[in-house]
Length: 158
Image (cartoon, rainbow, N blue to C red):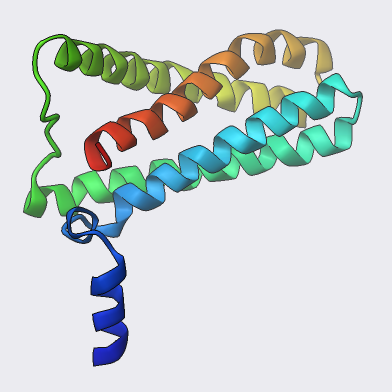
């Protein structure tokens, strides 16, 4: 990167963001992208557009997989250098954040095999079982995606 590009970057990127590796920011974008495709997929299936629903859900799955890869990469490499990002609040705010984080993490752990099962059933064209699984998988997947963005926002933007 040349000197003028670096100077422009330093002027436009807030100092707090510049101190953090790019991974948390990219991970938040992937969570937000998954959220958009999840909602679009729901709207498509409600409208009876199965093909568009399938495309949206595959794209949501890709965004979530990219998020997971980036999350694991960041926490297995960069976090050793930078340490975990701590929540700065206290009292009720800290309790609320910890509850949000706990439900997000537990939801993500529970949701991964549910998403894989739901995708497998769709790939096998087992539509009845796919629909039953999707009715349980979708709300949790959406919750995990949305709360992932909220956790990022609380840690890096507030």
